[in-house]
Image (cartoon, rainbow, N blue to C red; front, side, top):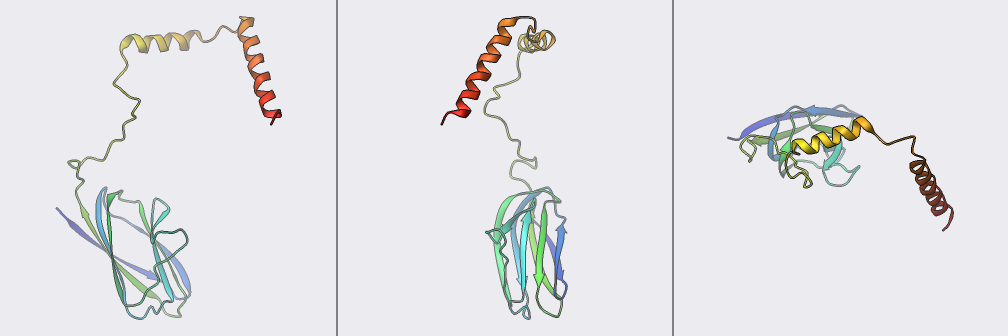
Length: 165
């Protein structure tokens, strides 16, 4: 099922503004940005996702328009508190931007995507867990001088690599 959210973003005269956009932990299908007549190229808007600029593409850029409707196909997961609007206004009057967000359920059956490490092949068996626990309990033998000599030799080799070009 699709849901429509609306946001009015007001940027004060001769100023800047930011606004957190509360939505859902779901899929954001599209965003419609409405820049009414009267902005006359004196205002700008951008959308940030997790603090990184995503609309328009290119850090430090803004959508600067007048009497225009911009449809943007997002089609990706978002979190309820991940989106922020940022804008500027060089006019002597405040200006509004109108945004319409179309949200749908996640494609994976309503569950967030789980990222699995390619190195994970399953849970370790009990013997492996015990071996790791035994190593943690015993640790290296600090009374063995060969361990210290090997460490000194390795450090000398590393130091030589850093000095020579």
